[in-house]
Image (cartoon, rainbow, N blue to C red):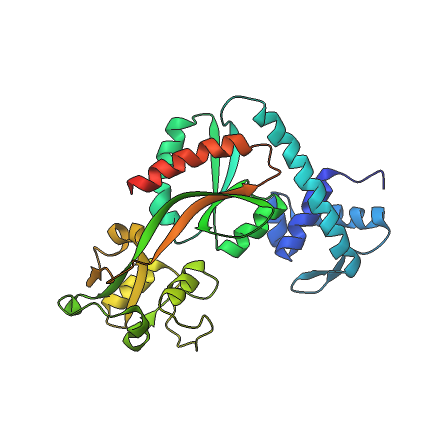
Length: 297
């Protein structure tokens, strides 16, 4: 067991995440044979197999799954040592890994990246765009430092900082612009188009319209808000999008935008990070910058 190296542990973590030697090797920037050798040496150190190898992918053995839990704890602790050193300095410096959900990233990031570069010139921001569930898992594992998501996430291990709220609007074909805005609970009859399952914005829209989250699949879900808007312009139905998407996604589509009567549906956007993060005070500073950019959109 004295021959274990952090490099081997990181290789094993990447292989467990990707389930494929080729993809893990690409992520680790080494050759596939070199990765195989390192994993084999790791198994020899443990004296037990970590993987079940097949022609297409690899699976962890039960022992490998137990080892992975401890390996990720070790890697997270090692990463936090680097964070402690950065926290001892003034301001944000070095690499910061930021996660953003897809219904925020395209609309916030262009302005945010410019502002971050101007405010924190010594910081290198690395952005990861994926759905909320993936970001929470990666934040737990220490693979990202912080994330911009829709709140609440209700994870006891995370600090949640609300930044701003934004309303939802109805998008419908421009031929319907002169007709009364339908009530939310009637949108299902209008053929409500939604993001595919896994997006938190899908669940928020269904909740606002008082519709079950497990509604029958009709084959008309979209992978992005931009796709949904184009589908509306083609006359396939109506959709609901957040305000920040309006100036980006609607000008080129044959659609009209309207607000609902009565109480306006909205979401709270915020930042989250691990309560144990040594960078907490710096991330709080970053959240002020994100808030300023978001409120200006």
